[in-house]
Length: 108
Image (cartoon, rainbow, N blue to C red; front, side):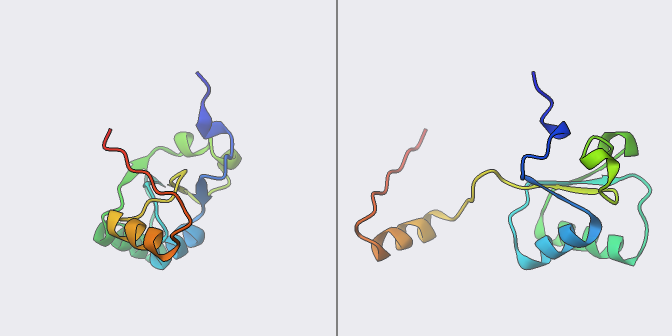
């Protein structure tokens, strides 16, 4: 099985500032890996924002983060969803705004 953490597939954000900006802007984030032992004001702000928005985060050893971009990540890696999610109500509203689009639902 291929280790997807070793390649940059475009579904990750790296670094304290880019991840914090993404969180503050409301970008969808699946989870965030944080290097054990991180400190500082920006780190505390990121942690507060992650917690208040219910974004899962995990403290991991530096060795695990070294797999991402050869370790050039400032100890912060965010996993981004591979597809955009939206509430059902918003999806239905958008479908009615453009009646020429086909909309299909599945409960499975």
